[in-house]
Length: 324
Image 1 (cartoon, helix red, strand yellow):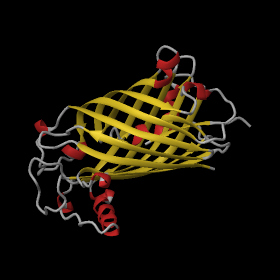
Image 2 (image 1 turned 60 degrees about the horizontal axis):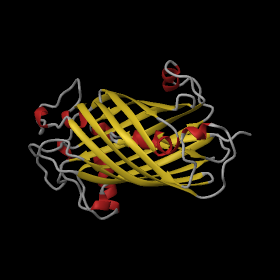
Image 3 (image 1 turned 90 degrees about the vertical axis):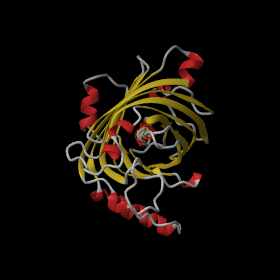
Image 4 (image 1 turned 120 degrees about the vertical axis):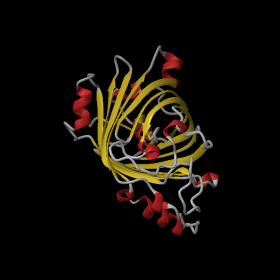
């Protein structure tokens, strides 16, 4: 039986929120199984902080038998593929002010907010044109219904950390629909095409609207070109690894986690619209490790300021994958 290529991340991007991009941007080999599950955990405790994008968790499931899902149908309108990978997922993202030990609303600071999304994502590879297209469609909710207070309080109790005491000031409930589209295009041949991969990503909906332009660098002992993996061949049964370095610039037009819901604005937002920075950047560095049906990824993410009174922010993200 032919071996199948699976592509993961978690950008999100994210990205975004990095969860989306981290789930879909890398091509890896797996054992000859039809299904794959990935658990992703993001947190800033590594850097002894508990602010801004403070934590996130996501679970995704990929199956080669998924056909005619919404994201597949959308990509089918754009490109002919040699390989396609499709899955479904669940994610929760949690945001807090700089300090979680202030019970009152803090002016000119990020508000407490959280959201959950149910998602469908697809990745298409076209070998001839050296293109990887990926997209993700999510539906969910932001606000108390996303259970951000309960999740953060539970984690802090487990690790004996100070309890957050300002969640009564979190943003109101709001319905979310979110769509992300990403294009990766290799140029030239040889070393440049194998290691330097530019990409364009855009995200629209009631969660966030932004455009991102970035570059990804990949070095390791695994097969060098992502597009080469689309050619079906045997899996090497050895430990494979690769370093990932990346940088992107992002133009932000709207962010519900800072501004409140698009259709039900909060009346007491602590952050004026004009304080939100429209040009942002992110730097990333990490490693992917693959062995047979298992994978592990750890990334360090460095985000620029999101609003005028903020500071730069660092956090770690890890995901664990298993094919079965």
